[in-house]
Amino acid sequence: MIDTLNDAQREAVRYLDGPCLVIAGAGSGKTRVITRKIVHLIESGVTPRAIAAITFTNKAAQEMAVRLKVLVSLR
Image 1 (cartoon, rainbow, N blue to C red):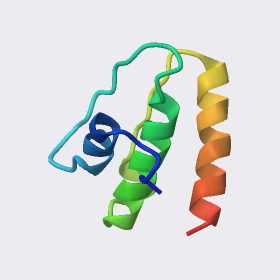
Image 2: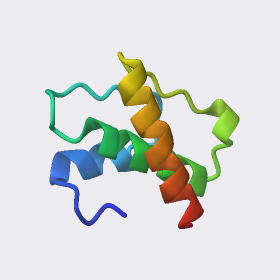
Image 3: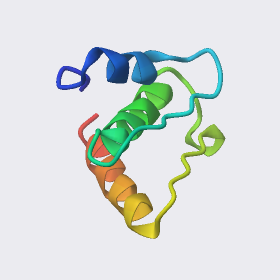
Image 4: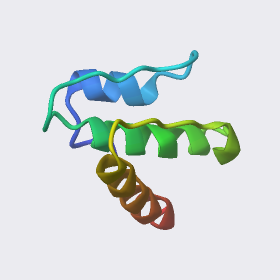
């Protein structure tokens, strides 16, 4: 799941010691990181109701939801 991520992205996905803010430019893989982080949190025992993922646009939120459905169904 994280094999295609670079070192900084993998670090953000694996970070579990509190809130994690991901800030990066367009096309840098933010949605990929956030969706994989959510899956990692769920696999680590965090209830989905305790996870908040915030985006700046409805388009990004919809894309994140679609990607999460795919990733979670593969687990």
